[in-house]
Amino acid sequence: MTTSELRELYQAGKLRSARVCHDTLSMGWLVTFYDDEGNQFELTDTLGCRVSYESPRAAEDKVHQVADCPTRVDSLYRFFEV
Image (cartoon, rainbow, N blue to C red; front, side, top):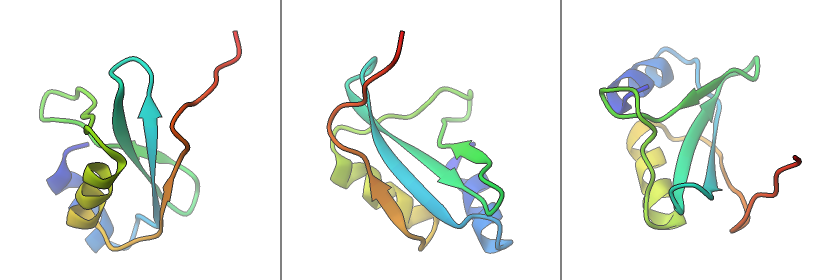
């Protein structure tokens, strides 16, 4: 979802938290928002492509442009099971 779409959800009281995590494919940082039911809303551009940021700080700044909610920053690397 775009920044404006996520901002509308937050203003409607539907977003409760955010997570910033490291993406091993783009080597950037992704932003995902969550509602009370655990549904995920990933920050994307207008074409629906994920937006990544160069640092956790830049991603956190984007979270604060959308919503004033608790934000969890994951560690530098995520491990995947094969």
